[in-house]
Structure formats: C-alpha cells, structure tokens
Amino acid sequence: MIVIALYNLKGGVGKTASCVNFAYLAAKEGYKTLLWDIDPQGSTSFYYKAKPKTHPGIKKLISKDANLENVIMATEFDHLDIIPADNSARSFDVMVEEMKSSKNRLKSVLKQFDGEYDFVFIDCPPGFSALSENIFSAADIVLMPIIPTTLSVRTYNMVKDYFKEKDIDSNKMMCFFTMTDLRKNMHNEIMEQLYKDKKFFQNYIPYLSDVEKMGIHRQPIEAFARSSYAANCYRELWTEITEGVLE
Image (cartoon, rainbow, N blue to C red; front, side):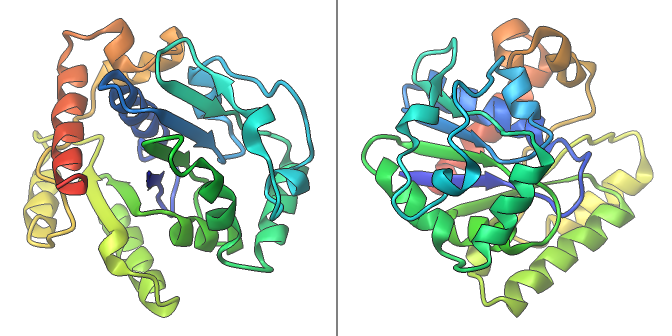
C-alpha cells in the first residue's frame, strides 16, 4: 500500500484538483484506491458528491483502535472509495489537538488498510501543525503542487526547511508544477531554476479552464472531458509519478 499526501503550505495551488484526478486515474488503472479528505473545506468530498453517512466523532476516527470501515463510502467509480471530510471546524480542531500526543497516530490508523488498498490519497489542509507532521510521518510520498511564482518558491523552501527541522525524510517530498502559464517569463524562469532540483517531475499542469469546470461537473476531468488537453496533462503526469513510485 502506497500512501500519497497532496500537500502545500499555502492554499489555492491546485492541490485538491490534483488529488481528485490522481486518485481517479489510479482507480481507473485497476488499483484499489482510498481517498481520505482531511481538508476541512471538504472540496474533494464535494467533487465526489460524498457526505459522511455517520458522525462517529473525530476522536473515535483517529483513535488507536479506530475502525474506519463504517465511514468509508464507495464513489460512483470502480475501485475508488472515499472517507469524506467532516467539515466542522470544531472537529478539525479536535483532530489537530489529538495528533499532538503522537506524530505516528495517523500512521497507525492507516495500517488497517494495508493489503486492502493499493493506494491511499490524502487531501491535506494547508499549514504546519501536529496534523501535518502526522501526515508526513504516515505518507510514503508528500506530493506538492507548486505554482511557478516567487511566493510559491518561498513556501516550497519553507517546507524543505520544516522537513529538515523535524528530521523527516526529505526523499518523501516530490513536486510538480501546476497552474502554469508558459507565456509568462517568470513561470519559465522559475521552472528552469527548480527543475535543477531533482524533486520536480518534468510533466506539469497548465492553467486550464477544464480544471475549474470540475466544480460544475463534480467529477474528475477524465470523467467529463477525457479528450481534453487538461485530462491528457494529468494522465502524463500520473504516468511519470507511477514510474517514479512503482519502479
């Protein structure tokens, strides 16, 4: 089982759109896939039309003996299940507080899925917290979408420094460019600069209207616009990621 956390220190970088599309592509390839929406905004759950069936309480959900079976929902797509977000701010605060007791709490909860799922994708909230440290510990890959702008480069360097400070394996961090516009000199220059850092995949996601239309269709791009350039970009990037992950 491979755990992939879609994360960035800042919001608005295409993290959720990428998480939704990568999980769909993994499932389409026949991999048994679980998508856990931990971001309190619940956008991943919105795209998959998923609302929690029950409210077991966030403490029970992340306790040592947690049984997540009753909160997992099937999506309309084969091989793809989801744990929807509990978008209560209070629940999110409780989750962060509970994670302070151990940076391995989330990792131990996810162990119950080993052998049941091939991939687990986590849509993470932005920022640094006890929860993010738990996510970094549990994940095999921390996949970061980066917009090629000065501020995004700054946050990328901050995350690298955080990994070093917390003694987290930096090899977990893998990055790709998103919301890219090659007509802009700054985007080209920053991409050229950061490609020298071997953490970046060569394929990238351009700034495209079909990505925004996901909110209208409430589906991954592949499901409503398979022949589009956006869908092709995600397929090519996912292929590159799996080549790096499954080699």
